[in-house]
Amino acid sequence: MGDSHLARVRRSLAVINAEVRNLAVGGSTVVDLETQLRELDDAREGREGIVNLSIGTNDAAPWRGISVDTFANGLAGTLTTLGGEDVIYLAPPGVVEERLPADAPWTNAAIDDYRSAALDVCRIHGAQVIRADDIVKPFGPNAFSEDGVHLSGTGYRALLPVINTLSASENPVPQGR
Image 1 (cartoon, rainbow, N blue to C red):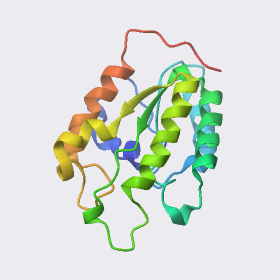
Image 2 (spheres, rainbow, N blue to C red; image 1 turned 45 degrees about the horizontal axis):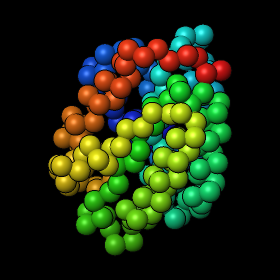
Image 3 (cartoon, helix red, strand yellow; image 1 turned 135 degrees about the vertical axis):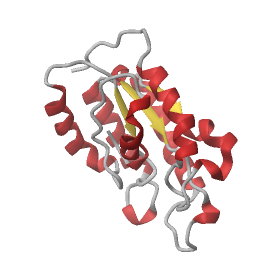
Image 4 (tube, rainbow, N blue to C red; image 1 turned 120 degrees about the horizontal axis):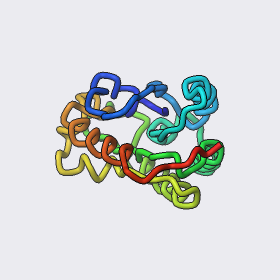
């Protein structure tokens, strides 16, 4: 669940060695997670499993008006609802600022602030974290599509095996609700 960094994974779900229900929606912010949680409840139908969550890039866009504190509190509420141990948080990969229009809402400095807050919240709630920024860093701008915001095929080829490995971990995760 979450934003376009996971919504776009629909194209490559075969890489994930598990049954996947992708509820992520492009453009989502922490405010949208409540709706996705309701959809998740319907999709789970009593089944247990890991929730992969990507949120933070859109929250960092100044025109959204979501402060770092509001973001952190919303993420904490979501992790409390899910049971933090049931969640793998995909930290935002950042953006390629040179590819963005001059009036683009994102900067890596702002995304860093939201990522940092999310990492603190995840530590408190016991959620596992995948640092997408660290994973795609070796590929530089090639990890991103031409828009500079979304990941490219290169970025996903680096990221999806990490998601798959962590999601398929042999450590059973208890149901958090």
